[in-house]
Figure (cartoon, rainbow, N blue to C red):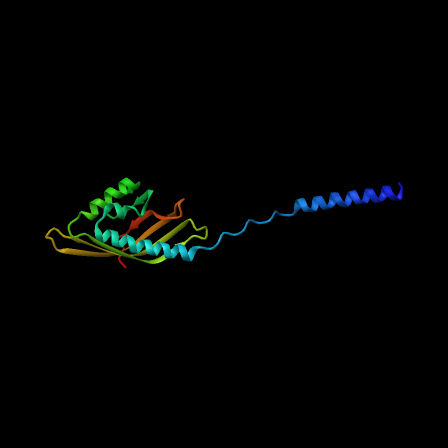
Length: 166
């Protein structure tokens, strides 16, 4: 083998080794998604404040606008409501009860790092008239699971008030 042939041979080996080395390198990682959890938490807390106002106005359409189409509501002493139509029926029934009033305040809103799910826990206060027409107030806790929709808005996926007192 001549000196020129040896040089070409060694060069070819170096090219092949370099190509193999590059092929085994991991590809560049995709850029990390921005952390929007604080902004998402603030958005959910703002939605809660609007939701409480909608309940106070007894506007059923507005109240149920905070639920996703596939939402489920698990109210104490009521059958589970699955789907927005069923949730709307349950809400309409509650809003129509004599003396009905409901307020709630989230104590914790935890947004997933992925930014597409969140859960909220808090306390609510519900007032209804008893059989004699006297207002009776119940204070208890609740859990809401939120999902970010394709349009970027948050909607309640699961609403589960409890009878557990604070």
